[in-house]
Length: 467
Image (cartoon, rainbow, N blue to C red; front, side, top):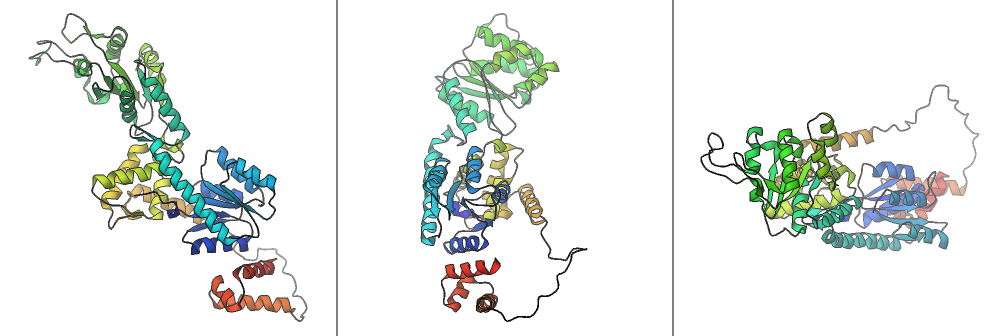
């Protein structure tokens, strides 16, 4: 499945209602869905909960200008495609907009063919950029184009070159084991074993034997000598997931193994040399665990010297969009399916959900949706109920925004009717246009055909009638 930006709507920010309708209608005719708002402030509010493919904005708007809107979006890290239009264009404005990151700059009166071509160019440029960046944004299978993830990949690659212990911090589901494996692959130890162990899954009374091994007869049931996890990872990397769950008495022995590069099997009489690189991970706040005497401060400082934090999904900006499509491809291929399309409502739900379980939760949701999908279409109903419910709540909240009802408020003075007079020719013309518009059910294209005028002329006369 390829990423198709036109699955998302285009956002038109224009305070002139007639021009906004004209742009939306032209773009609808060209096959795009659109959303229109009259101000930069409303655009920002909409973008906070609704993904769009790109934005077309006028420069002169009530309140915040289109240039200020562009600047704010770019400063926030948004890579949204943006076309700036204005009737008051100057070379200076064009240069300023392009310097701030606008993808194109057009002037009024609008050439509708030029608008369509500009939109196509921006979306195509985004598509090609995404295709290229997707190759560049994989770090041993981890997808991340955002600045936070690119910085993480850079730091991880640098730390991988040393043999020092590494501590990976991050919420559940962020991909700590994936990063540990990536560090191992980047290191000089990549041909040796990578041995993962979850410290929370090993019973406390067996943990020392699991890590360091035991000699024959060391305890009841030890009928033969057994090598531990340190020996299994000899020459490679030992990944200690959820190290915060390790009993404090074993933490002292782990610290000794790190410092001396030796281990003593349970029941053994001598230390045995080991060559293992430790990569540890936790979702716990270890400083708080130290305060509560659940974690040794000396072990923490030994590990924390080289630490990496994986950001939660909510801090990764546009990464979620890349992850959605990458994971759809991954699970469709695994299941032998071909997903050709994703419903806009399903995509909106996937992009807007908060994901307390981070990437793991996202992947589980997509695996389910791909499994349930039929006829090559991933539908909204295929998603887990919690994603659908949050999407419905957001939509309900947006629909409940107060609007003017048109009712007369108590105490309002109703003006007396004006004296009768003959309507002007211009007024008759406007009334006639309104009648034809009503007769065509509001279809402006059909209205213009009936009146024998260009649609741009119709919009201009409708605009004049509203002044």
